[in-house]
Length: 125
Image 1 (tube, rainbow, N blue to C red):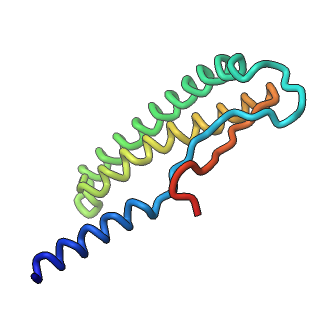
Image 2: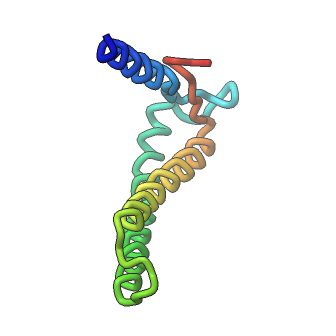
């Protein structure tokens, strides 16, 4: 009986945890009544620009992360490459890409009269 109760509690906790996070999708919407290009045209112009800038940002972040790891390995009193510092480095590289991509993409789209609208599709509050 006790095992069944534990299983029920675990299932409830897992079920509730999954419901706690809303899911979002994005779409392009015009921010004025007469955008200068279609959404597809603006996307085909802006996406490559954003990808190129984001790739450069990721490369720069990777160089910085590698330098920090080497420095830490050579300095005994600093963290010498533990799991957490490796995780932080890879996270900063991912964030450099995504933040740069979003900034450049949205800035470019705005020049053509478009913006990204993010809306909740599941588990909305």
